[in-house]
Amino acid sequence: AQSVTQLDSHVSVSEGTPVLLRCNYSSSYSPSLFWYVQHPNKGLQLLLKYTSAATLVKGINGFEAEFKKSETSFHLTKPSAHMSDAAEYFCVVRVYNNNDMRFGAGTRLTVKP
Amino acid sequence: DTEVTQTPKHLVMGMTNKKSLKCEQHMGHRAMYWYKQKAKKPPELMFVYSYEKLSINESVPSRFSPECPNSSLLNLHLHALQPEDSALYLCASSQAYNTSFTDTQYFGPGTRLTVL
Image (tube, rainbow over all chains, first blue to last red; front, side):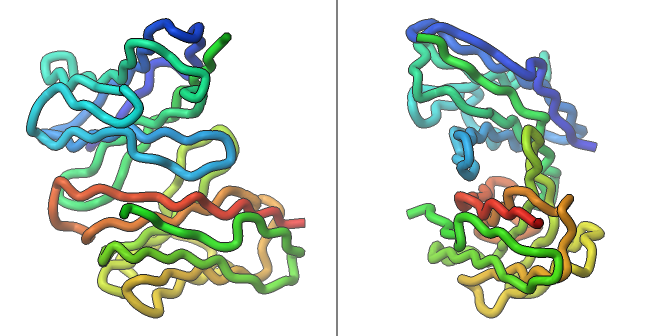
């Protein structure tokens, strides 16, 4: 069965420093993986997705993620945090052969001035 | 355009009220979804419609009644809700269900529901 584990429930960084949000996945098949961001009292916005093309995926707002099959990881990174990046981030794996999504528990990113 | 709209943004209702949530997309998507999200938790799938037919009902209580009048519109009818049903209700859509592995779900902004 497919699942994802977000390794940190809360990450705090200073503005201008790098961001790393960690996600490990479990899948019997080659997975389809997503990162979504949710700002307070808002819906989910797609940041980026991996669907077995390039292993380094670039998304919106300067975020990128690298698919590492050997480590079963799909960590989200950004070189320099901005105050507007403060939000909840969800790593998601799509179940093979249908559109069911398995969400991680979420990581809350705090950005300090 | 990848926009999914939801109305209303906020809804407060009593336990005896009947209300409806509305979701709309004009991307030509043929799959639409309702999710429930409690505070500080990930979204939980409630229903999936594929080509205007109910494909998935994740054992949701009958006080929640979904409806898909056409390919662009999805409603969630609410009746006799409980305070524990208070949550953010999210709608999403994708090109299709149970097909392409590269398909992506696009989410609306949600309706914040409070049941008194």
